Structure formats: structure tokens, C-alpha cells
Length: 526
Image (cartoon, rainbow, N blue to C red; front, top):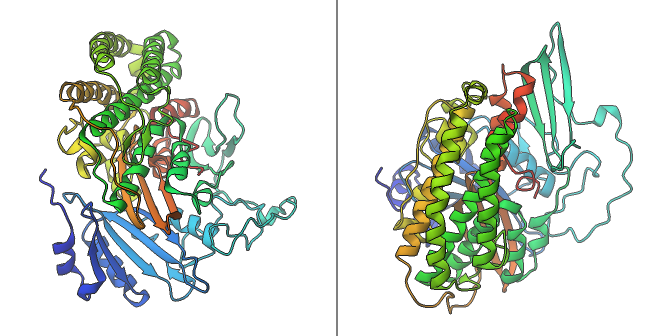
């Protein structure tokens, strides 16, 4: 695949808009300002040209009586930059784009909760992150909202309760699971409609412990807000902090030193390894084969200890800072890591071969929880889920950042879309992560680990490939403080995949299908 840096020439041909409406960011993103009267026509052309919708978010200036702005982010195969539409609302109503872009429904519900913006002809007006206990006019992301106390929560009348989809028919019954679970996991509600043990519908509802990370970021310095990026999702600390720092660095025109870029890649790939090892172990546990999980758990613990050895944190807390890396790693430690990875690879490949040699494991993995390839683009599914369904998507390749423009990852594609394919994709990702780390160490330059430039005002988008897929961060800095911070992790979109993957499977296979995706509750409940 040959990638073109920017969409600008193509957009000029597609949209008949004045020149002053177009601009280009440092990362080759094309930014177009549009008016409400042009919105439907522009969206129609974007849909016709096979763009994928990445995310939508609202922002608002602190200037009194200003109207919110909606930002729509799209991508197109073969182009390294994103297409960013900025729509300044003349009223607090806008046409829904949920019909051509199904995942827009989630973002529109999120924006409706946070900003009170209504979407005309929206297919779903249910609450998202503000559950029905909150007052109707409670919109915490508005600039006029200042620590408003929530009224005493009262019991919700039955006619105001969240309405799950009803499946009717003889023998159909519902199984509600969660939000409180038997294990030590985060809360999420799963509502199954089944006949016998066969699943005919599943609805997932999240946001039981919404933390308000985006609101907490407002008014903080960029350095202070980095701690919030670390807290988005525990096992994506490196990925999310890298994305946040990259956005600030793009705003400020910072050039991250080469040595820091190498260390950032090493840390991110080490995080990818331990995260996916946990997935693979969990999949073995969920088919009642804990013996097969043990080698993966052991290797995962070793990687976590190496993380601590390299950065001072098992989860890379505090390792990434704006402009580079907080603490250098000695040549001796890097040499030891290279030697360890040789032993790791041998034991890891033995563990994979041993697990896949078990007929009982293959019987449970094969043909279970299929995600069809035609769902990937409309739902913006990314990461191992997409690649296991035949779609070659990876931010490190599609939108290169850091050292990935030079050390290009090798990705595996399978087309079965089932649990077995997702296992094999993750198994190969770990092998490639080891290769990338070894190359980064082998080519490690000497020099500083921190840029000397200072943070400036402005806004920028960044995207990274976490272990689960595409994570997107938008940072807007005004007068040296965070004006708006928007995060969307891969889990936000990928949770939808499980609603399709479980159909016509049996209830006992749900834990396995769920673990094969291993989506983040915290990464969704921001």
C-alpha cells in the first residue's frame, strides 16, 4: 500500500468551498471549516467516497454566549492524514449522521449528555454516560457548568428507566448480567435475549463509574493533564500518554530527540506484549484449560518486572513526558533486555504451539464469535478484531507516528473473524513486537531524551495503536491551559463488535468471546 501524506488536493477537488476554509496540520491532517447549510452535502460526499468515521466531539469556547463547535474526524484508506470537519453551530441542533455512519449514534448520545446538543432524526436518544438518575438539564461539559451540585438522586420511575431492545417470540427470555460481576472486574451491563442457550440479541451498557476525565483536564497545565492521560486505561498507559504527548508536541512544534523516540517505541511494544499475553492466558482459562494459561501468565509477570526495571513503573506510569522520556535507560539494561527477549521468544512460541495442539481448545476457539468483515468499516472496528476479520488496519502503518515511519510493523491478516483468528493475530503481534524492540535497541542512538522547546497554544489530533486498536486524542491549549481534551479509545467502538459476535452462539461461549476481545471498561468510561 502506498500512502499519500495529505488529503488536501483531493478535498479541494471534492468540495467546492473557499480556499480560506482549508488548512493543514503538522501531521498532514486536512481541516475544513463548514457551515450548517453545507453540512448535509459535505457528509454525503464523504460517505460516497468510502471514508470511515473515526470520532465526533463537541467543544466550547469560554467566551460568553459563544456557540459550541462540533468536530468530525474521518479517515480514508491510503491517506496518512485525517480529514477533520469543524462545524460551528448556529443553533443547538444539528442533523444526525447515524444512518450513513452507524457509530455516530454513540458520539451523538455522548455529546447530547455532555453539551445538551440535540441531533435531528437521531435513531437513538437514550442517555449514554449520564444515566437516567441525573437531572435532564445537567450537561457537565458546558463552560457554564461549574461544579454544580447534583440533586439528591431519587428512584427512577419505571417509564423513565433505560429501555433495552425487546425481542419477542415464543420461548424468548432475557438474562441480565451485571453491572456488578462475581469477579474483580469493572462494571458493565450485558442484556441477553435467548432461546434455550442460543443468543438472539445482546445489548451492552457501560458508564457505571464515569470519571469525568475530559472535564477534569480543563484548566490544567499540559504537564498536569498528562497524569489524566495515564489514567484513561491501566494497561494502555504508554499508548495513551504517548498519544497525549504527541498532540501537545505537534501543537508546539517540538522535535522529540531520536533516542527518546526509540525508548518510546520500546516501552509501547513492551506494554503491547504484556497486555496481549493476559488476553491469551484469559482465553485459555475460559475454555477450562488453566494449564495452558500458566506459561503466558508467567511471561507476563516477567515483562511487567522488566517494565519496572526500564522505567521505574510496571505500567510505565510517569515514563512519558511532553517532549520525550522522563528517565534514560542504560546501554547495559538494553543489552540485558535483548538477551532476555531471546529466551522469552523460545518459551513463548512453545506455549503457543502447546496450547494450539489441544483439540479441546481448538474445538472451543474455531468458528466461535465471528465478526464479519463487512462490519469493520461501518462500526470503525480496529486492532486485532479488525485484522482477524480480514481488514489490514493499524495506526502505526496507516498514520505513522514516532519511530514507526522507519521501523514499520509487520501485521498479519486472517479472514475467519472468530476467536481462533483473534488468538492467532495476537500471538503474531507479540512476535512482531519483540522484533521491533530488538531493532530499536540495535539502532539506538546516543543523545538527549527531552526536547528543549516549550509548550505553545493551539490544537492538534493524534492517534496511536494500543493493544486493542486505534486510540484518538485531541488537545486544545489556550493561554497555557487545557481548554478541551477529548479521548476515544479503541474499546469505545469495539464494544459494539461483541453484540454481533455472540449472535447464534450459546451463552457459555460469551465469556470466551468477551475475553478474545478483552475490551477496556475504564477506557470507555472516561
